[in-house]
Length: 346
Image (cartoon, rainbow, N blue to C red; front, side, top):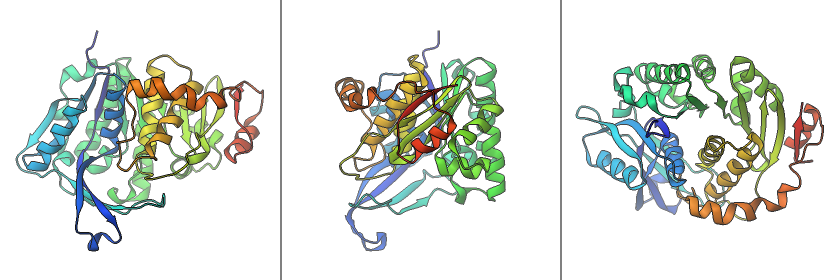
């Protein structure tokens, strides 16, 4: 039995968050945190009690030490994070917003230590992990990191491990949109659970409707597809059923960054605990709703105790709506528009 519940990999950057509103050029004070979609998910899963191993590289610098110290304080096993003496730890600047709009983020990651991840970074012991979570960010960093992504996902799937994949598109990191679409879809074909946002799914597949986007990935080898619809909730589809799960209402949106990572935490954790896909999406929506109510990328991710205390109350009002209705995919489109909440059996 593996001691690793979940293996995740990618780049964790230092993040300097503005302490006042306005243009980044005018901000004089910043608060130091960490950022990275992949490590956000790893932290969220660790907070829920999973044993999570983090595979990455950081520079031999103070920011690299800060990143490792922060991740270890969150319970991650960082024994597979290499210290790179030749390349720096990436970092970013993030503006402050108080109106729920997306903050401005400036990245300083080109040539970073994490971009030098490679197949050689994979220790055989990592392949004993129960589950692998991957995103489209590491393969966008460099050709060597892309090769590592394919190797890890291929070998884990061949070994009978479950694999989840969030496209997390970063167009500015790719040579072209065509390359991005091709490579991301090749990676998605190696995953059991695929988690695109609606706009991502439309760009990657050429289809408009969530049902068609999901069918595209099911045909490529996925077992379940969950499509994030923002505040409206999420649509899911498997080979057996499909449905829409409404979003959890939020009184005040503080920071939208990290909502998708929270969604991934909820979905992966619930599926690994053998909940149904509909139940997993419900948890995913709830954790995503928590994420947008906190400033910072991962500060809103709950602990197991917090989830046990709050989750059932938050979704109890929706439970009666999650019954099979016998609707067709047309119902999924209506649900996406906020007209109803359904679970469909097909």
